[in-house]
Length: 125
Image (spheres, rainbow, N blue to C red):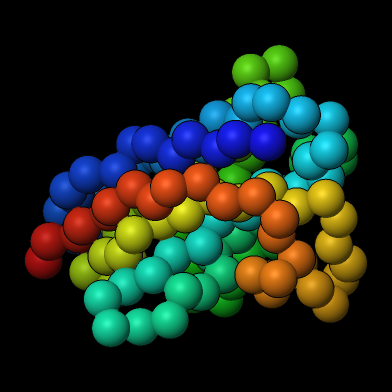
C-alpha cells in the first residue's frame, strides 16, 4: 500500500485547506485511513481517522467541529477538510492506513501500518 498526501500550503487564521490522501497498491488491505500531525518540537499526534467501509469518523478533541474527514472509495482517496484554522494547526500532516483497529486503539500510531510522506500546513496569524 502506498499513500500520497497533498494539499498542504499556507493559510491565514480562520481560513481553510483540504488535504487529499490517495492510496494505491493493495488497497483491499485497508480498513481505515487516518491523519496525524507533527508540529515543530512536538511529538506526532492523532488528528482524525475514518473506516473506509462505513465512513465512520473519529476526531481528536482539538479539531472536532473544525475538521471533517471523508472518503471517495471510487478514487481510493480520503480527504481532510480543515476549517477555522489557527496557528496551532501548523504542522506536517501525515496520512496513514490501518489494516484494522478498535474503539480503544484508533488513535494510536501503532495501529497504522502504512504511512505516506507528510505535507506541510502553515497557518499565519
